Image (cartoon, rainbow, N blue to C red; front, side):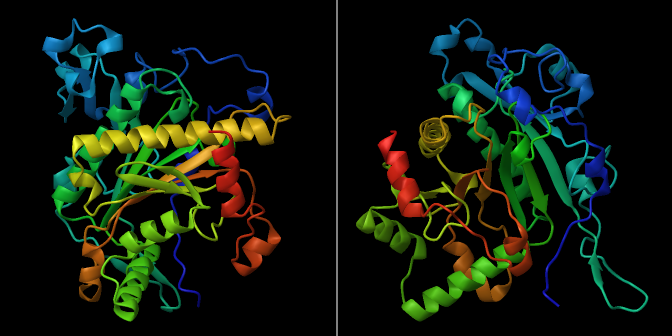
Length: 380
């Protein structure tokens, strides 16, 4: 009746949890750069699926001191051979998720070969009362640092820049395959944010079908453009936020970080580009600026938590997700798709949904975006 969809992935319930509990976080000492029990630390490669991409120092940069290394000193090796995986020291590593939300069948086959069959398989129940679709896709884990750190605010400038270049690389792979409708990156940090491992990592999923919420956003974007005559919704949004000013947190050359109007969660921040173009096509300079800004936003949220919740000594738990541009959409929304700008949303897990939110589908935010932005600016 409500036209809501859910993915049933029973295998996800089997994944091991090794995250910090809320009680231990408050008393735990600073984490070491290495944990022998962590499946994401160097030396534990056999505890994950084989790497589909690694980031390693170029041979001619091996002698460069660590403090002088730059992103261009590294190479991105897709589909590394077993010999390469064994021989080369990795700094970032991408693996297939062992407990995927979406999959394509035989995990031993190549990514492209897995996509050679039919995908939109509708399976009708005997009475045709419910509608079921096989959810095909891809689910990867991006181990965005070889160090056993917790999240982006603990990472170095070099590490975060390399991480975003890996995101671009993997999303290009998903786009270029030509079978996926949508792919995006997300990150869970902390137990209350859904993380099952304390070692910093992100995840990437690619869907054969366009998620309903993305389809609805394209429809609203198309309706706004037709009704208002405005050629670029995003250009208008950036201009409006800058003109109003009260929700702006960071204003850089290429990006705007702001607390969205009527945001559904307290202290939520969205990063929107000030230029058109797909994330997969960002130039290195654009990507590096975005990476640094994302790191600074998370660090700022952590500082704000320390100031406004001084009795809570636990590190900040948060979710990050990319609202990426779809790879394809239905014909009526072709223009809206061309005008789509990818954004990044950072949401601290400060509140939980309760009966009211679950019962009527409306979120309750106890901190207005204007107040949130003012608090964040105060602790800059």
